[in-house]
Image 1 (cartoon, rainbow, N blue to C red):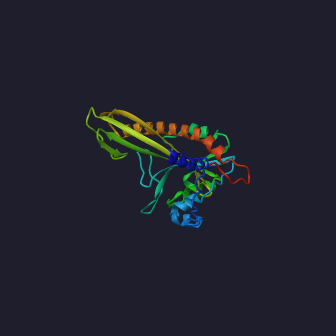
Image 2 (cartoon, rainbow, N blue to C red; image 1 turned 60 degrees about the vertical axis):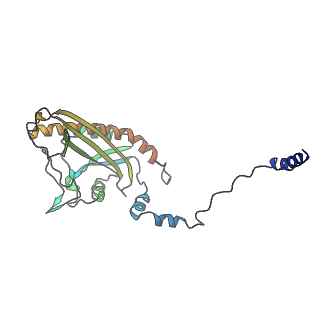
Image 3 (tube, rainbow, N blue to C red; image 1 turned 180 degrees about the horizontal axis):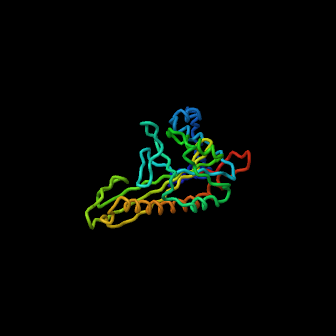
Length: 260
């Protein structure tokens, strides 16, 4: 018992001592992970995108263009974007077989937009390789923002999925046919290609495959589905726009932006 009391007396002072928190983190810069080292570890193409800064000033002028694949054609559209025998990386569709004037009027009525200017064919270079050609065309319209959009449309019958233009007429009766379109859009800075927003939405229509008795009938359901997808896309853009303005509408000289 005497030894136990002696041991307890030795332990009590130790229990009464204050707790010391653990030390701080290691200094990664001292270990070689300096800002220069971080940059060296980042792929050059990624670093180039990260280095871009928003340059827009409000109120802004918005240029708009529809883009599709370089070899895009449809029942109502003949492709533009090819020089001699060389195909561009994309084509610009200037024919509005899906869009309506009220769509762009709705966009132009958004706050902090002075006007919406569609990109005309005459403004576009013959060779279409990157977003630079679109931004050059937008600059000719004195726009500082560029909105370009595209339609990804497919036809499906049972387990067979084929891109637009490859569906064979006279499909087996009583097969359910589904047309799906995803409309996507990118809002970009004309000055340097900085991306402010990306929006997309999807529409779908179903009907019996034998209802497609002609190429024109097929194209009608294509346009109907793309129209529905585009209407949803416009709604998405309109809902995203206030966030873009709140995030990037900064006083002259301000250089800090909210992380999105």
